[in-house]
Image (cartoon, rainbow, N blue to C red; front, side):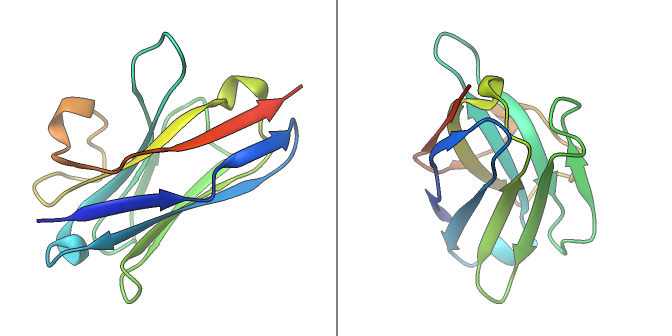
Length: 125
């Protein structure tokens, strides 16, 4: 069982930065692939980034590659998403997800079993 709580969302101007955090509880965090997803109004939830259980491997959606960085600190049971050069089209609710069965390149929403409640990110132009 894994429980996930996101934080760090907010309102930022285009070109700015935000750092999202996802605090996890549960015994399987340290062996779980962790992912960040987002959902804009009227759109389907989409993959943003994922990190392997060790933190040594990462995978990104093309839309955020070079601007966002996913990382994790297993000692703190926390995964992060550093978002730089933000654009208005990055506006969405951002969700943290976890699953111990998946590889770090798994980007499919239905495959992740554990989800947080989401945090809103709004980028103004």
